[in-house]
Amino acid sequence: MSQNILIIEDDRRIANWVKVYIERAGFSAAVAYDGQAGLAAARRLAPDLIILDLMLPRLGGIEVCNILRRESDVPIIMLTAKETHSDRIKGLDSGADDYIVKPFDPDEVVARARAVLRRAHKEVQQVLTCGAISLNATSQSATVNGRPVSLSPAQFALLAAFMRHPNQVLTRDQLISLAFNNDYDGFDRAIDNHILRLRKQLGPAAPIKTVYGAGYKLVGEDG
Image (cartoon, rainbow, N blue to C red; front, side):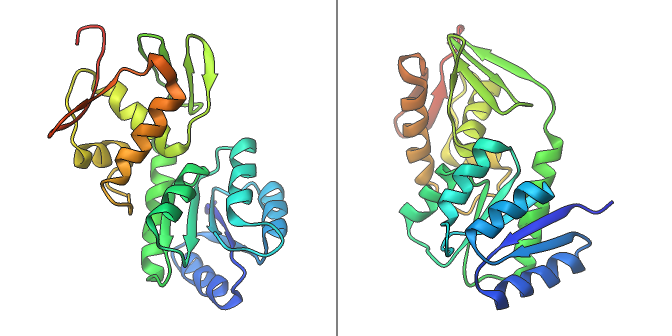
């Protein structure tokens, strides 16, 4: 059975255009033209992936993304005409797994969809620990001293990369490769913002150290 992709986009021309390419690639596709209809469709259809426009009538894309992220771990690709650094960070921090800026090549959307789905289905159950921090790769959850910590998908991916390579200095490029399999459209400096937010979420327990001129290192018990 083909995987189902939900496209939530208010521009009907773009939505139907993306739908055609998605279906040509062998996926099933459904379309919703506003945020409320998209949220209802996501709950009804339980899609394998959602392509979500940022600027939507009735309910904005960020709000839809936040609600969906509280309810499920469905992969989300944010699709938007906005291209500023802050908008990209806002989209990823709201729970999106990837970000595509208009105008775009529909083949790129298909490629990104495949990459995000591939990552989602490659996840294996694994629990990693470092000091007070524990991370479960299957449930996409993390705890500090046994208490749950709320992390965006980008923050979680970075923490997993650090915890799989303790006491190793990682450059921004290495972090992008390890955390996002190079499927990352943000600026490399945006990694700094993600790490700053990750440290704040983890609190005093965060052992992520800046190695000036080199990158970052998660200091483990042997570090």
